[in-house]
Length: 552
Image (cartoon, one colour):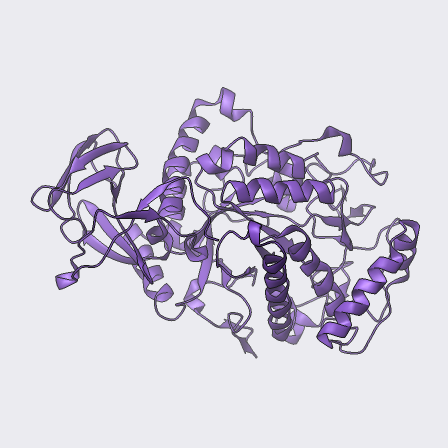
């Protein structure tokens, strides 16, 4: 069943292509959701919004942590509240990626920066449970349903590479499951995979094919919770169906794909991809696809569209320049090969800072429509573990939004990008400053933040309404004033837009003859005015320096 979006988008039909001229019909159709063009919002579940203060403390996590290194109260209910309030819809967000919500280690580590709890979600203790600090399974079910009603896809975060650290409250997993050394030196393929990311972060032996028994701490926990027999029976059924050996990675794949069949999530962002053997991700894709097909078959009334399950990988330091290959020095790996739909693009923040619009847009479009055709990249300007963001001091928030949301590829809005949430917090060390609590107060008290939000909303909704922005072919129309077109075509659907940037305030004249025809009504989504095309041109009179043109 096709999902119906709230916005109507022009259906653009190529009636002739003489000199790249595009003639647009008056017929309209709802825009399809296209992962390659998605506007994805990334949030730390614990730091976004506290929807239930009753779950703020669990497992006696009461020790004083370093600044921004303990749980702050954000939870699944808080995300659902913002979905239902229309915050994401107003921002043009059509997919949300949340940090892992599985049960975390109960204790805290001391990393030299003060005590740290697993607030970020990457220190798993039990993949089969949701950490009560984040909420319950019912909370996750309600979140996914609320998102889907708004046309928003949900990505959870998958960790197969490691468990949580060892603490006074958390034991190390059995030796058959994990290695506790040596630390990775990142100088070779083996020095990146057969090692621990850092000290005291046990590494899952994903290369192992020999069967292993369940860890005793999970057996005891499940027995106490009265669900051991159920979990054991499900595991036996999984291994019987797949024929896989009872090796560590396959247990975790079973536990992760349960979130697909039980809740109907739409994708996974996968953590620490290059620290695991490449074939692991091909196996994971197979099981995710199988689980998604099973969910769709069992819940035909909840199917949004015909899109497949989505996997985006974090191959740290991969950039679009590498195209399909990541180079370890002594080994080259293609992670797109029957595994990931997309990879996080670590190049974008540098490209955005050092190159002009046309240089970035033209090159990205060229690569995405050739070497990476059928795949995509996930661009970002800031994130949870990149200490060198595009705009650390939040001095170029308008520019950041323009470059990110108009760039070819999928856009990743990091929570607070749209409100200039601080990325430099006094008294913090390491990545903690990047993970401050969402600055919701700015919506009421900060005029600058509200202006920034309005800018990101206009661009975000335009991107969400037009798959051509992220997935279309880019062509510069005029150098000065700078304008370009994006055209996307798939089967019987075609979409075209024209964008002008760095334009003068007041009257602006744009040549749109290669995209729109005379007498067409064209809407500027930035200034919200409609004009007629005359002699191949449109005249927009506004105090804005951006024009976002769509066929009305």
